Image 1 (cartoon, rainbow, N blue to C red):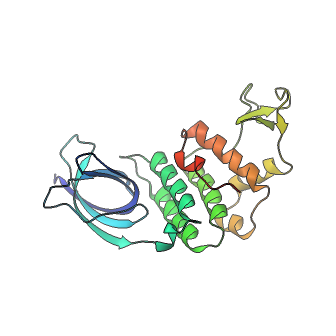
Image 2 (image 1 turned 90 degrees about the vertical axis):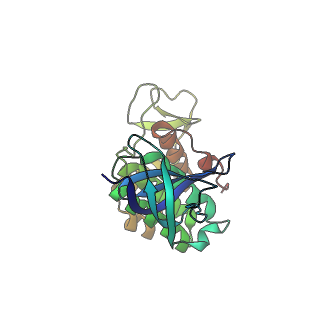
Length: 232
């Protein structure tokens, strides 16, 4: 079996090492790929950045998790994602996708959804709403249920939030009640298609962002990009 493989995907993570090497993650239809571009290698490919669509050739020895990035060619980019009003939301979806889809597991649907999310953020006027919808859909596509449960008893009948802790009526205590229509908005997020959600943005969006933070924290863990989003 050849130790060389060719693939095409979107850059979801990059980190420059102390020695100058560059470690990158790509999301492809075949799943996540991880590779290192050596600083001093004659085969070192040109610089690649987040959100870029690149074709790569990777050399990997049997049993190695991290392959050697031998060649990289830019296949596409979305320049508007660098705009201040769009970048934070593209970064959120990219960090989420990088955490949701792992190396060795195929991710055709996840890749397609993530690529569409970046295009939507790059082109549509309300990047914040696009990011909110697509973050929920990425979670749903990865197999997570878009529903809250009481952190005390596990009931699905959540009526309040104590900080980031969902509570039912019996366990509510002094926790503040959910905003009117917020449970229905979350149900709609799970039931409706992306197109339907884009055509009719839900309210209250502030509650949906809190729900997203809860679900991400429960299913994925803390995301730095989510904490750094602009306040609305």
